[in-house]
Length: 521
Image (cartoon, rainbow, N blue to C red; front, side, top):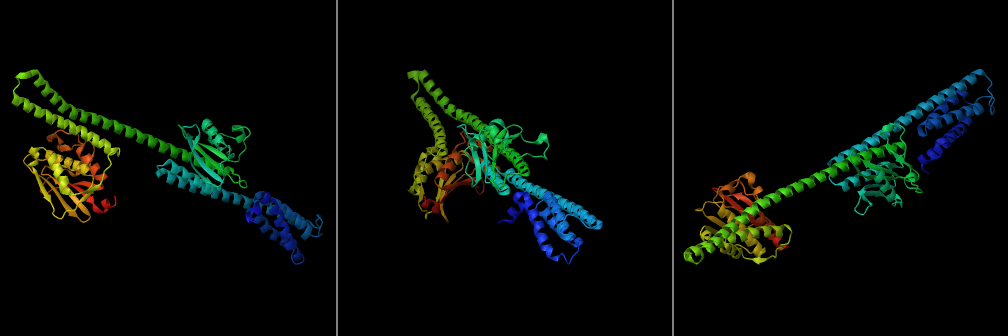
């Protein structure tokens, strides 16, 4: 049998009686060798041991029993409560006083030690919780850590943490631990706590000021006919109720007042943490909405200009030709229609950019990977450029170039965006080089211009949607979607797009296609 259970059985009084009886039986054979005062000294450690193991009240019981045992067994006349001389009476009275005082002092020392250990345990738990929840971002992870610590420190059969009501009107359980099954009335009690913000089953805390105590009721008061030993604490902050902390003790170890005070502190800490996480999530959501509104504003501003400008120009030219009627000069009609075609092509390109970006972000434009020669892709890119721009293109392609496994249409689209960007941001008289060579693990396709280059501060931002950089003022109008689309296409094809500085000046956009990654796709 467990010694602690044996000592604490019957609140420790049977142990106190047994300790005195056992000591008396041990001392009795030596009655002829020692005087009564010697036995008095031998009984004192027994009483102190009882006080140390069981408590002050139990030691008082042991002191009275030891006083009686001394009078009956070790002070003549034996087996009678009468005492033959006054000094022996004085000795017995002094022994009783010393035994009582020693036992009480030892018992109180034990209580203070237990209180200190309890405070240390509480501080250690609260420190662990504070350190963890201060850096934790997930409510579920926070809840799991809290219930695990409660179950470990308080040795309860079950611990759980519930959030507020879910969409179905039932409490949402964030975390739980322990071997005990969920009681049939647990959900009802949790719902009652969420509605009333009152605790259920909390042990009374005599050392806590009244104004700091949680309002607690018995389970029968909350749900008539329901009996439970569990504790249900509301996670209440100054502004909201974040959930409910549940602790179900094991039957042989009910929760004490110290345990209840510790649970209340844990509940306050959990409430503050969950409220902070909820507010951070709401702030993040608000910031996301604000960013979405900003992007919408930017999109409307950029797209409206890019769509309306060519549309207005084409409309004006067609309207002018209609007003002139049959008397218009055929050569001018041909020139105007050519301009209209360019405007419509520009309009079609802007709409295509928007559609491409939308499909890429929604994963609706899945790549169909096949083996292609890089030269075939670059030939398609060149064919898509206006005839006036083709003369500015210079190729630098290695002879030992292997084929690449990509989506032909997507990769041609991405390279076209890079070439158009290079042509737009470099002087009209300069050349743009399109190159390809073999790398250690794959193939690199690059586009290099002789423009002003890209500052280091903008090398990451140029791939953001609608960002056109400081040099955009001197460049043709555009949506600022070409480079983001190119990066998304390259990424979906298993590659990487990055920007480098060209020598002696300019920018080089490099597409790296990893051969080992592509083979496994």
